[in-house]
Length: 190
Image (tube, rainbow, N blue to C red; front, top):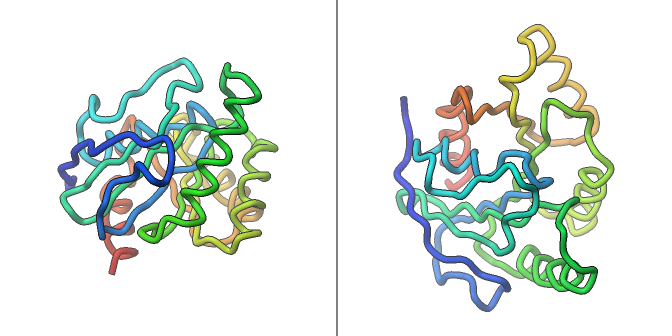
């Protein structure tokens, strides 16, 4: 199976702390526990590279990962859940907006949707924000292995109905669509 080597680069709170690189960058957007860190680990076949947790809201910084000098994946804090103060949430929002709007290396945003649940209100709010600024984005439907094969096409069709653009299926657990995802990301870098 095709996989890429990856290494952790740095964690940053705000744009000025982001790594200096000319590589295409893909920030990961999604609710807490939607599978962003597991996605990173599956692409490089290393379960310990990006920290995963059953407790929502553990990612507090932008974590940058270099994939074989082909592209960077930026794991962002999940939206929708975090046991933090309103003041801290406002600061995160300000820093993340600055990063997403001003980081020149960003090739496309990737929004994650959990296949096991209906699309959540905060997913729609995030997509509306992305579309307001006309940012490039595609969608990954994660945890597809939890859905019966006969229902997977219905889940995919539902997400496509609400979110325009490319919608791809993914399972970190079974590494379904992992090779296709690597090819897709590399092609976007061209």
